[in-house]
Image (cartoon, rainbow, N blue to C red):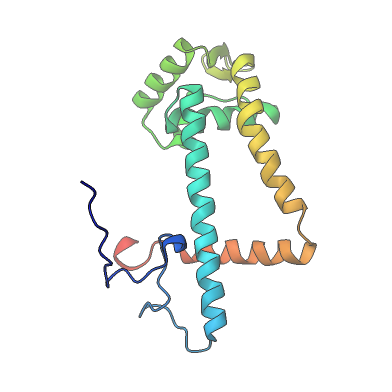
Length: 187
């Protein structure tokens, strides 16, 4: 009744090792100046970065489900909250620029979020022809209690590091941002 497990010689990986997402022997990465220990450590750095990206993606999905919003909605709400905290007014044009959508799509987004009780339209303080968009207090509190608490945990992780380690992380993430600029056919 039970199928017999036959070892697969192509899968010479210990069961507890899990899936490796980065190859130690890529022909595209120059490893000539690195020891085997250096290569192993670089792979562990890339695996840790992939793990954080996956955790951040999972958290983002959970936040969207909790607030019943899509990615564009979440981006708009985060931007409006930041602007309100800084005493800035937000117009539909600001939302379109932040989210990267057309004015027609922005109108639909705002209509949907107003109907859902996340946003309200108000009159611009100095231009009576312009409509401003604000986040409702209930949505602000919900975002504060979920996403805000997550940002506080991330800040705590950075604060727990030494100043030298934080500088190293800043250099690393800045270098990754530069490395991820589209090049060649992707540019």
